[in-house]
Structures are given as structure tokens and as C-alpha cells.
Amino acid sequence: MKIKAALAAFCCAAAAFAQAADMPKAISITYVKAPFNLQNIVMKERGMLEEAFKQEGVEIKWRVINSGAVQGQAMASGDLDFSAVMNTASLLMAAGAGNPIAVATGVAHPKEIFAIVGRPGESLSVKDLKGKRVAGPKGTVLHQLLVASLLKEGMSINDVEFINMDPGAAMTAVLSGKVDAGLLAANLVIKAHEAGAKTIATCEGYVEPNLVMTVRKSFAQDYPEAFRKVVEVNRAALEWIRTHQDEALQIGAKAQGVSIDDAKKLYDWSNFYDTLTEADIKGLELDQKFLIDNGMMEKAVDVRSLVLPEAMK
Image (tube, rainbow, N blue to C red):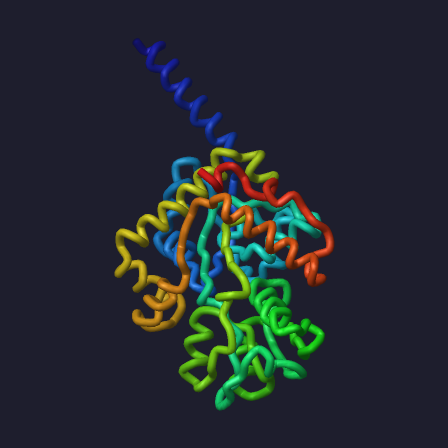
């Protein structure tokens, strides 16, 4: 009996070791609260990843990297395994630059959450932006929105004085009158409105924004079980949000520093989802054509190869 017990214990230990060997020692993932990434906020604040990987002893390393371009660079260097939230414009530009990146699962289709906002006291149209100073983050869906809206009015990015600036700084510049318009998102749009600024355009009619979770391709290949578990936890966070919406909104409001009413508005604007469809693939193809045609992306990539099978299951 002692021999059998010892053998059983050895087998269990061996199985546990094998399982641990198939897992990384740590997982590096971004914590990006803006525009209103409620899955990411809930997943971190409730310790969902830490709990999921507790048995395997995998350390979860949260990193605050808000720029999609910097996220892509961190993945290329191997310093980042997952971007919890990346817009597909940044994804495509990163992939076009040769960064080994892929879509793990969906996050949101937030048409109303991104906007071009004019300075207080003025009611501008897209046409009125000609010759004006516009501030916002380059290489993002907001940049894409500006280019698309100008193009629809027969203009190009060269018809405005575009200043590369993160959204928070852009809001400050707009409200102080240092620029004529800013590319803002989520609670920054709400705050700008409260200060008297008016929206010039949202993505509606110009861009079909898509936020996704991305993964370093070699991580997904080397640690398929860990990769799938991260995707499952992200999707579980969305399910929890949907079944505990009041509690989720309280968590989101606190993290973003907004009221519950504003958090509800941001939630409604976000259009959260998780599983990609063929429509999302088509959207990526159209986005890539737009980015290339307008000089925002040089080299085309096989869009379908960027979307891992798990993202569509």
C-alpha cells in the first residue's frame, strides 16, 4: 500500500510538473482603462487572472501602456505578451511594420466613444477644420477618424495642422484654446462637453472602430493553454459585467473617476463583444485599404492570418 501511495504521489507530482512546464513563469499584459475598457478594469480589479493562474504559480504582470504603437513595439521586443485592448488601426500598422502580433479575442465596437471635439464657444463642422490646428494621437483610430472625415469633405490631413498629442493633453489644449479641435475619447469627450465644447464628428459614417485583445504570436504558439486561459478569463469578465452590471459600473466609474451616470453612458457607447465574425475580418480588410491609400500604412499584410482561430470561437 505504501508503494502504491508513493507511486500515486509521484505520478501526481510529475503531472503537476508537466503542467507547470507548459506554463510561462509570468504573463505580461497591459492595463488600459481608456476609453472605457470595462473588461480590462474588471479583470484586474477583481484579480481574475491571478485567480485563474494561481494553481500553476504564474505571475501576472500588469503594465500601463496606453499607446497602441508602443504596445506593438513592446510585443516585438518580447517585453509584452498581451495587449488587453488595442484598436485595429494600431494592430494593422504594427503588423505592417513586421511586429509579430495577432488578435486573441474581441473587446468593443465603440462608434460613439471616439470624437473630434471643437474648442468651447465655437460650433465647427469638418469643413471648418481647413487650416485649423487639430491635436490628437497619431496612428490610432482617432487619427483614422480625422483622416476619413477630411477625405469625405474633399480634404486631406495636409489641409489641417495636425499635432501629435495624447488625448488627455489634446483635451487640455482644446479647452485652453491652444488648438481648434482635439481627438478625444470616452470620459474626455464628456468632460469637454461639460466645459462647453461641442462634438464635430464621431466615427458614425466615417470609421467602424474595433477594439481587440492582441497577443504576441510566439506566446500563443509556445503556451497555447495559457493563451486560451487568458482569452477565457477576458470573456468571463464580460459575462460577469453583463450579469452584474450595477456592480461593474461602480468599478468602472471609480477607475475612470466619473459618475455612475457617465459610466452608464460610456457602457452604452462601447458596444462590448468578444467573438469576432466574418464582418470583423471584412472590416479589417477595409481598414487596411484605407490606411494604405492614405499613407498611414506602407506594407499590406494577410489580414486573416492576424486573427487566431480562438478569436472566432
